[in-house]
Length: 278
Image (cartoon, rainbow, N blue to C red):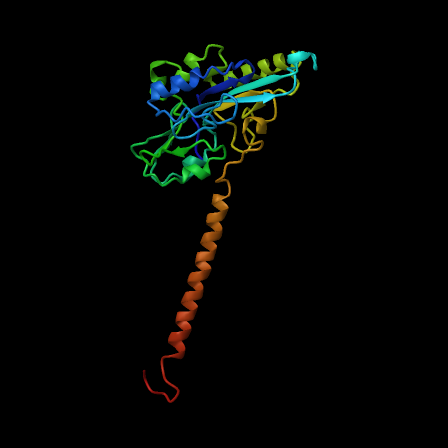
C-alpha cells in the first residue's frame, strides 16, 4: 500500500446536474493530447465511447430509465422517464493496486495525492490493467504503453484546475481539496434527497471502503451497477503480503526437501554394496 499526500486533491462529480454535453471529454483530449477513439454508433444512447480506456480518460455515460425523477409525479405522460448522465474518470485510489504491481515506477503518487502514469517509463507489461478494480487503465494500441487520467498534473503547479473541471458548464465536475469536497458532497446529498431523490448516494466517499476511499468520488442517483461501477470495490493487491509469505514458506520447504534428498543420495551412495569406493 502506498502513502497518500496529507494535502490531497481530487474530484467530486455531482451526476444530478450533469447534462451530458461531453465538454469534459473534449477538453481532456485537447489538453492531454489524447487520441480520438472512434465516433461509432454503439446503440447505447448517445454514448460513443462505452467506457474508460487508454484513449478515453473521461467517459460520459447515458442511462435511460422508464421512471420519474424524485420530484415528479409518476405516470404523467412523458414525465415518467429520466435520463441519468455521469462523467466517469480514474478514481486515484487511496490504496492503488496499479502502483503496487508496476515494476518500473512508471506509476507514481504525486504530491497532490493523485496517481499518474509516466508513459515514457512504462515498459508495456500491462500488469496495471487487470490490477485496477474499476477497469480504468488500458494499453494504447499505437504505442503499447499504459495511459489514464493524470488529473492534469501539469496544470496544478500553476494553480489551474484540471481541464475537465474548468470546462464543465454546470459545475458537475468539481475539483479541490479532498476533505472540503467531501463536506460539500454531504451537504449536496442532503439537498438532493430532500428534493425527493431518495435513491441518491455517494460513491467512493468512504475512506473505510475496500480501496481506502477514492480521490475521485461521485453523487449517484441510482445503484453503482447502473452506471457500470463495481458496488464494493476492493484493492486487488490486498492479499499480496500473505501470498508472498505463503510463497516464502513453500520455497523454504522445497529447498529443505531438495537438500534432504541430496544428502540422502550422498550418504547412501558413498560406498557400493561390497564396500567398493565409487
